[in-house]
Structure formats: C-alpha cells, structure tokens
Image (cartoon, rainbow, N blue to C red; front, side):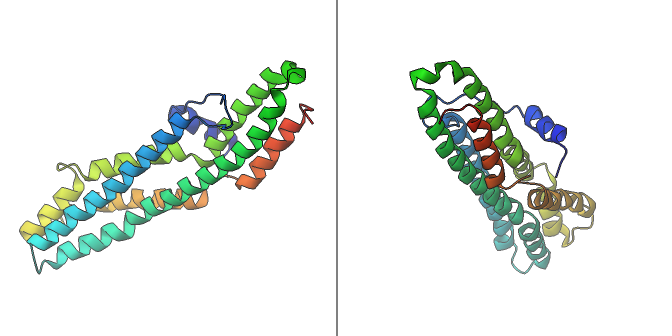
Length: 219
C-alpha cells in the first residue's frame, strides 16, 4: 500500500476537483460524465492503433516483422486498456455503494432538527470523496493512459517509426530500444493497477465512512 501522503500527492497533482452533492448522489454527474467520455476516447484510441497496424500488414503481405509488431502491441498495450476498464468498473461500483450510504444520511441531515450538523456532514462528505478518488486513482490513470495512446498515434512517434522501418527494411533494430522502453512503461502501468489500486477494498472504506457518519448521531 502506498503511504497516505503519496496518495494525496497524486490526487492534487492531477487536479481532481470535488463538490458536495445537493441531491441523492455523492459524486457530481459532470465529473462522472467526464470520466465516461475519457474512457470512450481511450477505447477509440486503442481501436485506432489496431487499425493502423492492421492496415500496414494488409498493405505489405508476407511481412512477418509487422506481424511480430502487432503481437507485441497486443501483448503490452491491450492489457493496459483492459485493466483500466476493470479498475473503472470497480470505481463506479464503489461510487454506487457510497451514494447509497450518502442518500440515507442526507435524508436525516435535511431534517430541521439536525440543521446544526449540516456543515459537519458536508465536511465528512468532502473528506470521503477525496478518499474514494485516492483509493482508485482513476482520473490519474485515465489521464496517463490516454496520453500514452495519443503519443503512439502521432506519426512522428515510435510506433510509426517502428512500422516504417519494418516496411522499408524488414527489420526493427533501429527503433528497438525506444520501443522496448515504451512497452516497459505499458507493463509498469499494468503492474501498478494490479498491485497498488485499489488501495483498499471498497467495503472497507465504505464501512469506515458509515462509522464516521454515525458519529453525527442522526439515528
């Protein structure tokens, strides 16, 4: 598990914004929609790269080096997107769990007799919004992976150089080291998502959240 100060460093460096929900959801629809759009852009990005490689193979039949490049790409970059989608699904599921808890306590805190506890309630909600984001680091992973895929689709970047060398010379020796570094970064992303996130199971932090809200004495 990463130290807590590192977790909140990642939250701050990637500019994650939070706001107190006014209805039955703890997380803003705007942010949820933004993450959904970015995930769609990542899925479109990997499909685009698949097409670039497949088109090169189709236009150069019999070039086995291009087949090797395609296999390499599939082995290193498809797991990144696949694991990100898995992490995103866990994040959405956890948000739903928190929303259900939040709506229950929101109904109580909106009772006029609990008006004095409203500010403390809002402070707790904001604190745990931060903790959910830090637990999954979903926005930072989306940002990093989208950037990597965008770089690969740039005609001046390593993938195109790799493909062009394979087409022109039937080899990839010239760009091998740069490509290895790129695939290593992809492998590290996969390892980090598998090993480090989520930092805690959602049921654990949801239980802690409930215990914190119970200190308000709303029931």
